[in-house]
Length: 377
Image (cartoon, rainbow, N blue to C red; front, side):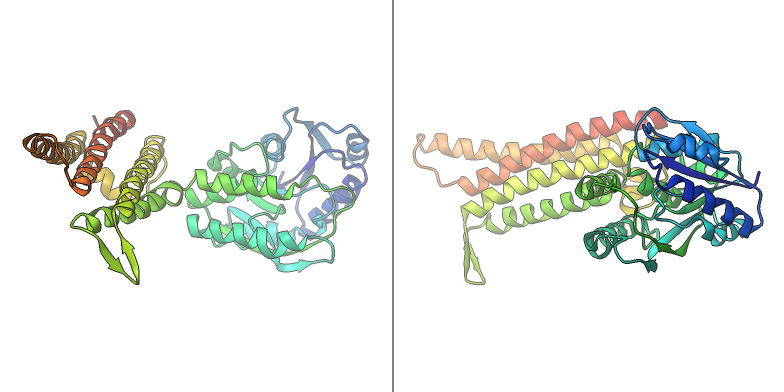
């Protein structure tokens, strides 16, 4: 068996027949032997009967969801190459030859692109076409360097070996993003093929904001650098700037006067930023212990040079500096017979150092616990 065409199905009696007929033409046009696997995901209409009457093999997946249906279909498929696409007749399965040819030439994953192909009138809402899909594609390429222009296109081809290497887990619409992300992480060969996108017959099951959010949150889950490390570092630097710049006294810049209120803000930002930053380090260390390849230079440097003792030294130094500084302020206050004391800036700066030091100490212990799995400690 060379090719398995896998279609998820949920109440698509009006279109499943047309998709199967076109799929047969596609196999014939490509000159390959193949099968059509329809994954029923709980249909209550005649979808299953229609599919069987046209010679498709029907398998059933009780767990609802786009990803669950495809995982079942891929697992049941007999073909060396897998072609996936929706059963709502928005994709023309008679035009799958370019996907099969690309797979035969060595591609591991072939993704259709509607944006570089042709989108017929009424096939894609303007919000999806001009904002949602390009925005998700931009983020996907920024985070994972995939080079994909249409990450939401559902017409794709992949090898059975590539499916096994991807270790796909998602059960919902984010399955489409997970496939591309995991293919990039596994350094599989990805190719794009322009396609024609047709209007859907019947009511769409897509929920614009709900499904878009699922894609976005999945990408953020897989990119601690952009979710935690970069925002945390930026917030910390802004906070430390205000703390240090206002420590000697009030200063003006651009007609604005920066005084103690900005220093309080700086203290809050430096604490908040350091917390976000350490959460990012936790996530990266967890990924490292789970066997994912760590690529960004900062984390490679951190993992190479980090040790519990170094973390304790850094946190201890910050804590002691802040503590001693506050003790000096306390002694000064006692010597003044507990009178008025204008030491708000130094006290706030010292308190911030104490907090940052304590965070560094306990974060070092937690990172060390995470790295126990790798035999680092």
